[in-house]
Image 1 (cartoon, rainbow, N blue to C red):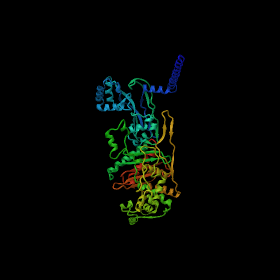
Image 2: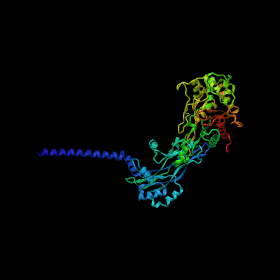
Image 3: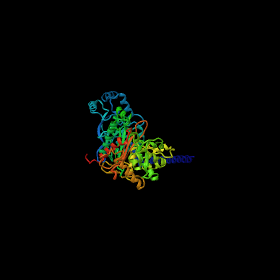
Image 4: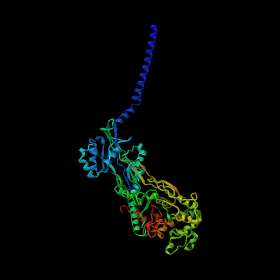
Length: 600
C-alpha cells in the first residue's frame, strides 16, 4: 500500500517538474524573443514614447531665371506660438495674448484645440498663432514674456519674391498644407504645419524645392508634456531651380501686354481686359517668357492672402487663370497655314491658281465675307501666297470647299494642335480641340469657317510650339521651364536636354511656300505696320478670331530671324480686335527685348 502511494507521489512530482521545465523554457524563449530578436524594435518604441521630435522648418529652394536673377527665395521672420501645457494660468494668459495679438480669445482657443486635441493631436508641438509677426507686435509680446511662460517666439523661413508680380503665375505660390494634401503626402513626412507649393513651379517641383526639416528632440512624460530638450539636427535647404525664363524678356512681355490692354480699353475695345504671350526657343523647347494678364504677386500669399487681395485675383477677370496654357481660344487666321498645308499636300490647289475675292462671289461661300470688304475694297484675284500675305478669307473658304474636315484636322494635328504639349506645370494645360468627322458631321458652311480657324480651339503655348515646327521645317521640341536643378552642395541633380516631341513631314514645296508667304506677311502683309524698320526679318501670321457677340480675339504668332529661327512668339489678346493692330505690336516688343544687346 505504501509503495503504491509512493509511486503516485513520484509520478505527480515528475509531472510537476516537467510542467515547471516547460514553463521555464517558454519564459526563456519569450525573453530571448523580446531582448535578442526584437530588442532593437522595442528599444526604438520606448525611445519614441520618451522623445518627441519637433521639426525645424527648412528654407525652400531658390528659383532663378536662366542668368541667375532671383525670382523666389526665403527670408527669416518670426512666428508667435504657444505650448499650452506650459501655461501657469491658461485663462489669464490667453486673455493677455488676445489683447497683445489683437486676436479673439475664441480664435486662440480654436487654434490650440486644432493642434492638441483629437486622434492626431500633438500637445508637445508649438501651436502657431501669428505668422510673419510685425515688429510692433513682437516687441509687445516680448515685453510680457515673463507673464506668458507658454509663449514661444520662433524664427522661421518664409517665402520671398524679390521681383513682385514678375512671372508670378509661372512661379506660383505657397500655402499651408490642407487636409486633402496631408492625407496624400503624410507618408512622405509632411505635417499639418507645413507649407507647400500650391501652383506653378512652386507646386510642380515641390519635390526639389522642399528642404529637409531639422528636428529638436524633446523629452516628454507619459502625458506627452515636454520635460527637457535633449538634442537637435539642423535643417537643410531645398534645391535651386534654374528656369529657362529670361527675366528681361519676361518683363518686356508683361509690360507690353499690360500697356496694350490699357491702350485698347481706353479706345474702341473696352472689354480687352486679358491676354497672354509665350516666347520659346524652337531649337530646344526652352520657354523664354510666358506672360498672362492679369497676373498676381505670389508674395500676397505669404503667410496668407488677405480677403481684399483674394477678391482682386479671384473675381472678375481672374489673375489666377493662366491664359497662356489653360486658355483655349479660336485661333482665327493664325490657323490658315495648316489649311494651306492640307491643301498643298492633298494637291487640291496649285501655287499658280487664282481665286477671286469679291462680294460678287459671297453666295458661293454661304454669304461668308472677307474682312477687307468692310473698307469698301476687295483683294481681287489672289493666288495662295497672296491669300496668306493679305489674310484673304475667300481664298481659304475655297480651300475649305475643296478639303474634307479630316484633311484639315490631320494637318493641324501633325503640329500638335488638340494635344497637350507635355509641359510639366501645375495646373495642367488645356488641350484645345481640332474636331474631325469622328466627332460630328460638318456642313459646307462650317468647313469654310474651319478653314479660317473658327471651328477649332488652341492655347497660346500650342500655337508657339506648332509655329516652332513650321520654323524648323518639321521638328517640334517638348517645351520646358527648368534648365537645371542644383542641390544645396552645388551638385547638379538634373539637367534638361532638348526632347523632340514630334516631327512633321511635308514636301519641300510646302515648306518653301510657308516660309516665303509668312515672311511676306510681316514685310508687306497684315503685320507689316507692326514690324516696319524692325531690322531683323520676321515670319508670322496675324489672326482675328470672331467670338460673337463680343469683339474678336487678336492673335499674332511668328518667329525670328525668318531664315534662322531663334525665338517663336505667340500673342493673344481677348476681345482685342485685329491681330495686326493689337497683337503683333506686343510680339515685336518681346522680340526687341530678346535681340537687344545684353545689358540693355
